[in-house]
Image (cartoon, rainbow, N blue to C red; front, side, top):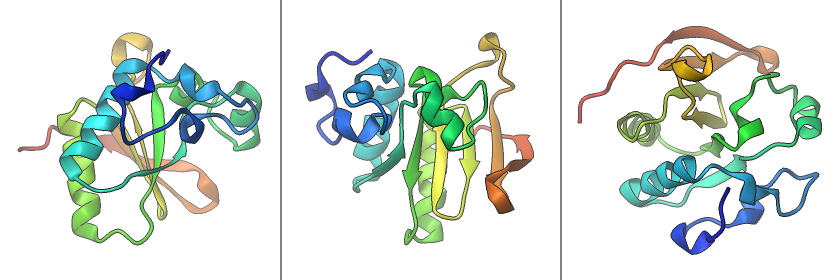
Amino acid sequence: MIKDWRRYPNFHSRELASPDQPGSGDMMDVHTMDRVQALRTILDRAIRINSGYRTPAHNRAVSGGTRSAHLRGRAVDIYWLGWSQAEKDDLVRVARQLGFTGCGIGRSFVHLDDVGNQEGYHRPLMWDYLAGGKAGNYRPWAAVPA
């Protein structure tokens, strides 16, 4: 739970909140947000968050998985429509180096999470969001050289 957003100068609780529960951005995990802020700092570009913490009701409304890391504040979806392929590749490479363990590639966004095998997830893992928003094409997310 985030108590002091000054630690994240490029983000605000509002943009990480579930739309059906104002103030719920504070439910984001500190370690996840440390990684998101580090990603923003290293890439040196604005990052727009589409989704952070989700209530169970909002997660169902967007057809999120029943074990979605968003439910625990351990995931973000970053809007990247308009980014070049090189910029997208950089984001994915840096995210892996920072310890993100899940990466879902969509046309207009990328999902990043930092849940682990010890929590019952198969990680590190990459996947694509296919037609209809369903996840598929799962594959190991190999360590990326610096």
